[in-house]
Amino acid sequence: MSDVAHPPETLEGWYSLHQIFQVDRGAVRALPPDLLSQDRDAVADALSELANPIEGGWSVPVLLIGSRSDLMLVHFRPTLDSLRDAQHRLSHLRLMESLRVTSSHLGVTEAGLYHITAELVRESEARGGSIGDEVYRARLRERVERERASEHVQRRLYPPLPGDMPYLCFYPMSKKRDANANWYTLPLSERSELMHLHGQVGRRYAGRVQQIITGSIGLDEWEWGVTLFAREPLEFKRLVTDMRFDRTSAVYAEFGEFFVGKVVGVGEWLGMLG
Image (cartoon, rainbow, N blue to C red; front, side, top):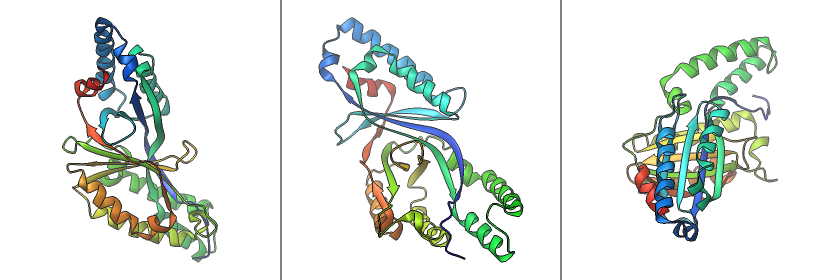
């Protein structure tokens, strides 16, 4: 394949928002007991409504452990507007004024089609065509429809909340654009091979870790968000360690802050608020 720095085709599904909060305990303690009780009930009602929205998706509360912050809310919704509605449903409640947002991440579930894009580019070159011509687009539509219909890709784009994996790890990441390590100037064939090898590392943890990848280029400061669920929190350490030794991460990845916690019920989450 010629030295083409061509972007991979992608499939997108649900929009996502990770909200990370620090509790202003002084503000909570200053509330009269009867008012605090009313406000807690209002937040509990809102969280219950958001857990299983009619339009699809889900929201889940997380108690953070070992972080500068205390709480996290994770939302998945079919549209950006419905994600905004979930955010606003809580933000206007009085008790939420006692929570300071320390970090947030906006994205959309993504399945990168590196291997398909690389194949289509090779086919274009072999027939003397060009990337994006009529034949390329027709073949792309065919392959994308087939890929989207697969159960594996459906679970990546519309991930269910794993009821048997209570521990959660979230971190944002980007690909480097340094002078000597610029992911975006690598030939498509090389990026495709690197991502294939990278995926093999993650597949070793199938059944032990559920991973949700959200793309954020053009939506957030970081380019991707990674959400991991596990029954045993040590799986996060093992998986991320293995990934760090993979060349895709070792040479081309930059990572943000890691947030680890446990998915809890509404009552336990509200226990942090007085």
